[in-house]
Amino acid sequence: MPDWPRTIPYDLYETLEAADHDAWRAAFQSWAKSHRLEFKLQWEAALLREVGRLDEYRCLPMIQDRWTAIREWLVAHDVPVPDGLPLRPETNSGF
Image (cartoon, rainbow, N blue to C red):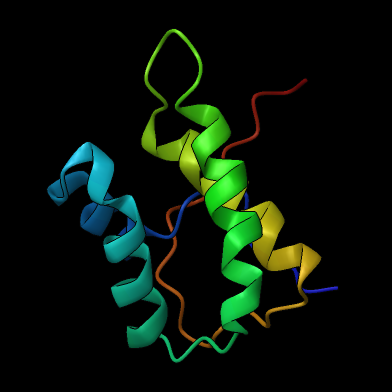
């Protein structure tokens, strides 16, 4: 099982922040392509469904909320973590 970080990779954060709220998919795809992530296109329906559920809530999802759904999807499909993934330090709140 790949060990994807719980904190959003910094370059993905910047990409999603610069994109329009509804343009997360194109931003994620360009980020995945830049890191040479390989996954099957038929897996994408599950990702769209999971991230789409976030939009059903009263409050709009934050970037970290989207990352959590994307991370769970990446882990579920055993997509390996690329080398050199730019990360912010993980924070431990002591819980």
